[in-house]
Image 1 (cartoon, one colour):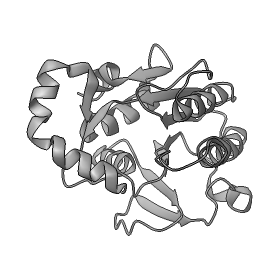
Image 2 (cartoon, rainbow, N blue to C red; image 1 turned 60 degrees about the vertical axis):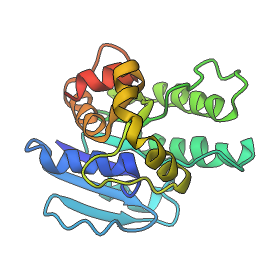
Image 3 (cartoon, one colour; image 1 turned 30 degrees about the vertical axis):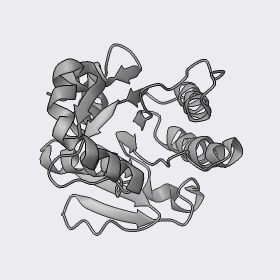
Image 4 (cartoon, rainbow, N blue to C red; image 1 turned 180 degrees about the vertical axis):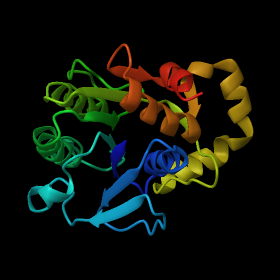
Amino acid sequence: MKVIVFGGSGMVGQAALRACLLDPEVSNVLMIGRSPTGTMDQKVRELTLPDVGDLSKVEDQVRGYDACFWCLGVASAGMTEAEYRRVTYDLTLRAAQTLSRLNPEMTFVYVSGAGTDSTEHGRAMWARVKGQTENALLRLPFHAAFMFRPGIIQPMHGIRSKTRSYRVLYALLRPFLFLVRLASPDSMTCTDHVGRAMIRVAREGAPKPLIGTREINALGM
């Protein structure tokens, strides 16, 4: 299986990359981002673009892939809805439209988040925009598309979030993660489960397109 990973320097992107490197059935990984991750592995090739939504000049390099893991995202704090939409919706859809045209047999996995609003009309700005993005991706002519909605993600194996506020939150929560998992197992997953679950749905599919934390944990065991 040949996989494209967007946002490989973030926490979920690192999880996806690690899972790909460990899976013997993944033969090639194309990392696309604004800056190189510096990953040194014979499976991996990196493509650095100033605008990762614009694949028009590299179409020949993104053909022939079986799956795409979209792990690119930003925190909405301090952003207007228009600004957040440009990064979350517009950028994602521009790239996805190109990939669906070039790779009609591709499975597209988009990492969203728990609380995403499929109705597109809720009060939370980020949830509305994420919901709009999910709905638009599901309408594209991919072979299959899956929307991952994880809750709390416990980083494993030295993986760290690029977002400072998330790093602080994980540091504060670390002593209590066991209790959180015990009290509410469906609200929490880990980077290992997320990465393995992405590969599994790309390879085997899943009964429904919206994949919550419970399903992520089951798929990623």
